[in-house]
Image (tube, rainbow, N blue to C red):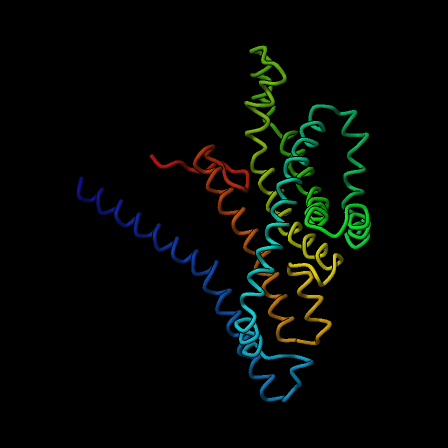
Length: 284
């Protein structure tokens, strides 16, 4: 009987590992293989058609341009990353404070929430010149543009999370005469963490876009991917322009991935939750 139990447990673990491997294959290997296939088709099309590199450079030409200008790309990516993360940090702090205020006052939420929505609807290309003219062509202006464009997801997601606290737990806190501060710190904030981290995850990509747009408006004399895009466009260096655009895409994807990874890690280990809002199964 005991040996049968051990064998069944072993089969269960093996099936679980096989399922994990299959999930990993579906999540990473298949998209990677698709990307390689598309790049191969792109390379073959450019070589067979004889199309000019000033119209469509081949992936190999783009890779060579990226390697040739790698130090310039790395410096520009680092500068843009710093501006984006600075703006994201500021938008996270400010957005969380605003969300806390909205969750505690229905009047305040009804009075000011429409203006938070309005902030999202204003085009960033209209906001960027105003900020640059007001604060100058410096790092502060770029970070502020990234902050403005990335604040709305933090406000909306965190406000939703703070208002979605379990009603039964709220009643339990009230029965025990908990103060509003205790309800906020011990119930609403922990339960809203998946929403907050989801908002930060969305805001991360927006912050990168905001930083690049800000650098583009600041001018080609400044460091950063936005200014580098402007310089490569002016010089008609199309392979290097493609390499810069790819670096921008990888930066946004990397920020999104890092926030997702560390968000899941914190929620799983500290609170037994996931970014989907579900309760994670703890290991016994």
